[in-house]
Amino acid sequence: MTLVTAAGGMSLAPGGFELWRALVVLAGTAFIVGAANTLNMYLEREVDCLMVRTKDRPLPAGRLEPRVALGFGVAQAFVAVPLLTFGLGAAGPITGLCAVIAFVAYVMVYTPMKQRSHVATWIGAIPGAMPALMGWTAVTGRIDPGGLAVFSVLFVWQIPHFHAITLYRLRDYQRAGLATLPGARGDAATRVEIVMYAFVQLACSLLLYALGVCGELYLVIASVSGLAYAGYAASGLFRGDAKWARRLFLASILYLPLVFGAMVLDGRL
Image 1 (cartoon, rainbow, N blue to C red):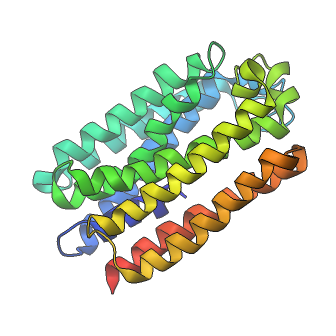
Image 2 (image 1 turned 90 degrees about the vertical axis):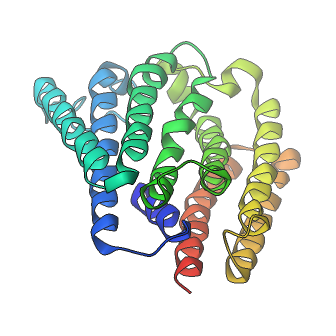
């Protein structure tokens, strides 16, 4: 999924498509995301043992030695940052910096904060949205309104996506001692926030058309899919339950590649 969003950022960025640049971005993104996820699982291996959703991962299940995971994660980071920083010409330094910010935010801020505050959801959304911005900066060499608009689509998408998970797996999160919005403010407040962010997400996706980043094809796909997603989210205000939350979670997984796929297609036409 992260590679799709990076490709979306590259496709929309003003400038010609270059295969070598795309390969460097996709490889560097894969390495930095792999590094962050590996080290996150290393740091949370004891917590993961307590959750049904994560107990079968290699570390908590005992299929992988912690020191091997640690070394693998560090090695990926040492490959990713130089590759992105020095492998993209003049656009490399800003892209490498974005990768470092994403890595630090995910491993050193988001991961430890998950047990302290549900605000970690918003912190985690920053590195989660960074691949799209990295794709943009790899072509333009700068952070500008267009790149931030692409970033905002992915950033906002993550909020209802993760709130939906915590609603239908709340006991799992509570067992592991992880802070969630439903645990802090209740299901009703969480459903309201999901609906709010679903409509903000729709607005952010349409902003790309307003800024002239995307064309009519993207506008149609983003409008229809965004309205459908936000409409289903809003139905949870009246009959929200675990089944609704799980379906919303699945709908969010379908929505994101649809929208970013439309970005890629629109950018190539």
